[in-house]
Image (cartoon, rainbow, N blue to C red):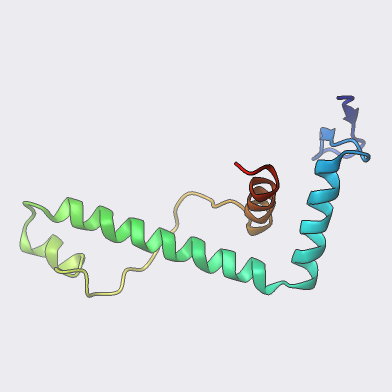
Length: 107
């Protein structure tokens, strides 16, 4: 594979234009542009997954904890869990690219 050095400061390598992978990613990008609700749905899924993970962490920590932590995590998990500022997430477009390539390659 030939590697083309890009002129811009943020893209060091550019995928060759004639590759099948590049065409698949272009189609995924067109899909995301025309149907922006896909990216919003991916963001909502990322939020829901983050809330589920946080709820699980709080439940694990609450075993053997005092009543103040049980009150914080909602006891049985009924209280709403709010996500704070955490690690940066993948861009929804990158997630769409990954899923598209995963479907195309069958892996």
